[in-house]
View (cartoon, rainbow over the protein chains, first blue to last red):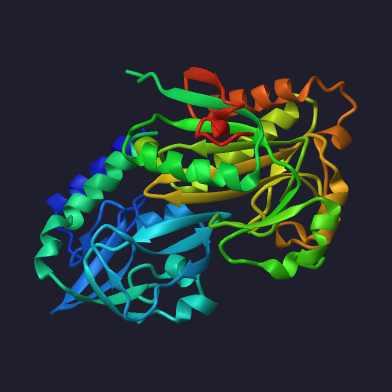
Length: 160
Length: 235
């Protein structure tokens, strides 16, 4: 069955310590980056000092479909871990997006206004959504690392 | 081992759009805290034009001030999708379900909503299909028979689908339906020569198609015609 083939492939990749500089891409799986942290609502966060860049994962964009619209917060807005900071629209569905960390929005990706598809094409790079000045760096301890997130996605996808 | 999945079905008759919206907001909050199980509202609306989060009101072709004259209202919502019309003889389902519990995302959910309407249409010999890319909805050839607009919050759905049994299609002339110009809107009545049963029967069939596609094996039917007067308001 496709499911067990994929699981074998992941285990094999980990066992053989295949380390590609930024991504671990296994055919059939969405990509997960090693140096990011992940929320169970499928957002990623990249921490750099007290600054955090946030977006949605490859798994999320694949499950959403083609993004046609992104609702961005205002620069300066306060957000808290686990609460909604905006939304994306795809296939006539608006889906809220949640912040993995608390803090103040210091930058939003204006490119998404004219090119919302960047979220699908480049979820971890050009499709970043907001940058936040974190109010509590320790909050990232509550998030998943890449291995935990990969496993989380496997379990979620196995539900149906 | 298959877990028995339950769906509570609320048969609500005709409900004012904003009342239904407020009810959905409450139910989403209740579903989020697991106060209630997966629920679907089955209802119709009086003539109402609605806009989605993108507020594409350039697709309303008559001034808002003229709406009262044709007996219609306009409502702004947070759902996805463009402008649409809801009215009598159009079957609406608003599923309030947890997508996280079944492990599916927006795309898969919307595909299943499309299939729900496609299956219903096939019961009457009507060959409907899902839209092309960017044209979510259900089509019979180049004519749209079913529309979708969804909101997903904390993995819980609200809004849903609208299937044209036999609505007054002239209301659609005042909008660019779903933002797609040059495509007609149609109805089950127009597309089939079959004898149609009562709308109540068709709505129940729609619910059965939904339940089957989403794997609900246990349906709990509730007549909720007077639910909105339970809050002390006299209707």
